[in-house]
Length: 380
Image (tube, rainbow, N blue to C red):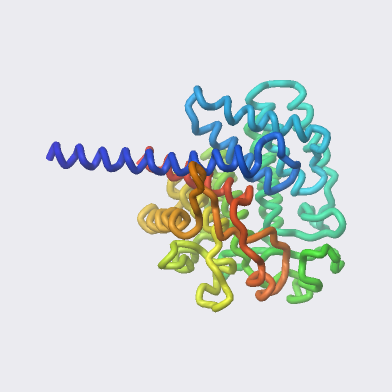
């Protein structure tokens, strides 16, 4: 029995080391090759990978934290003059300033983090107060929920002021009201509040005319991935006795309820448009897979989601990303099968989006998922 126990311990330890090494290889690729800190640009994709650096800072021992603190500091100092909160994709990077305000206590980062919030309060809104994804026209996008969450949740961690939690909670519900589908639990991509067909050279023209409610009609994978990650991060941040916790726990259960059955059996991945797994033009997409699995892992850890039902789902997704949606190059691990930046359109529009490799938001999602799985193994 002692021999069997020893073998099991060795196997578990080896699995942990292997998984951590894989995450480290993603991290080094992101920091050294894809987006070194001195090449940071003030935008949403960059903000997502920087969020992974914050997660790494939180997860690493004291001797290694300086690597990630320096990364965020360099990125924020380099983009100091670009820093603003005038629209959600800009607000996203503000979490770096709030993080530095919290960790360093430097007044200059505090002032900048607060200035971004002042900018944010001036952003265009819907008639009932939902933050518009764009400044040129008033639209609600599911992407916005995550972009706001990174900054607002970090502002709460920095200040302890409940107003930031309330603001995120309120924005989440305003977006949900227009975008969530009761049958699937998933969200459509967008809603047009001002009925203005804005030509952005990215969206399919007239997408808001597809329904009487002026919403788009498809459940885009990564769009829902953003929402799942935002909910999970809120659950990890708000106090367990807060009424907000109950709200977000309910929302995580709702948006993930169909995901186990929609997961591809062979690859462990979810599809570009998750509800059409058998459509000939659909394809497994890695960034939404990492995002869904990340949120589910946190749900399991916090006992919001049923461990027996959902743990195999996360493990299958993690294995699938390693086997089917990444490649190694020397000491680097590089995400593959990443849908390129995507706006709003019909079914054919999403199926027609090309895939890339690397990509800052995919690197970030892969790293954050890997760290959560390591944490889950340690606790259970």
